[in-house]
Length: 456
Image (cartoon, rainbow, N blue to C red; front, side, top):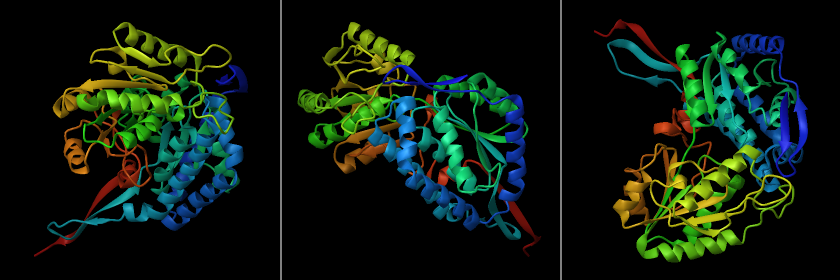
């Protein structure tokens, strides 16, 4: 049974029977059958469907957004914004897919030689709970516009969101099998990955889960894109605009109750401004409101699950025991639901729990750096490499970006995902890219075509 528990109340809100073997077979068969005609559609025809999906989501945002609030605790104002962002992603690829996939002429001994970009078949998206709508469209919009069909296996804790996304496609008249949702428990996914009708896999989630998916896909000689965990550094140098940095890093740390792979997890501050910056960040964090995610005034909702709350509490306690200073928060909030207070840990050092492990919650970790080189060394002192930010002059920030081991770097701004720009990690944060022109190229056959005769 797929069970959704409202993390604000700890009560079951939805129980869904998983797809049977017959259900999965029917969806796989439909996706493969649909591919034969979908691949022949023009970009304009595919784009028309994606734009209809986007329009439908915008028109029904007040029905779709609350599903995230009740199933994983996303504050309602963030949930509405996520539905809108998912719609934007669909629209972006509808508008730009053809240009992104335009043939590339290459010189050779042929009369004409070029690379054209063709679809692969059915792509399986395996997705987590923390951004149910955005991550679905980050995966499916480029894949669909490239001419693939898509099957989505969402996290078993958000079955309502999963079913709602599939319903949107049906309600706008998408051809049967072009996009569908597989309602499965996690152990059942391996069989789907191995099915010959699945040609590629997109996975977003934990490093452990990504390792398992990558191993299975590789054993079947199937390409995969992995977007995994992160312990993202944010370097604040002495010449930074400290007020602006504190404003943005506050948001970057606490959005989605801090449950984001690209959140600012380790804030590394140069010694001359260390104490001043902590004061500014503390004031901003202390003003945030933790509470019922269904209320407009709430800034931070609950942690999505009890086990995740317990893990976060362990990480914070361990880090304090190791010598960090707890300036704000530090203990789970007693009562119904899985709430954790806004927490600020300072005097964190390399080797401490919150420095080494990814923290998934509203916990800001501040580390003192002697100078720029020390800050850079600590920023790169992690097994992860998803994203980072630098706060300094633009020139200095761009120079540092080249030396930071991460898939994306923001200079004097928030780290975010954007349909126009590629996103992804290195090291144990994964491989491959999503979004932008790189994202749509992840699941195509870059076919070389050589046309004779040989040039004289």
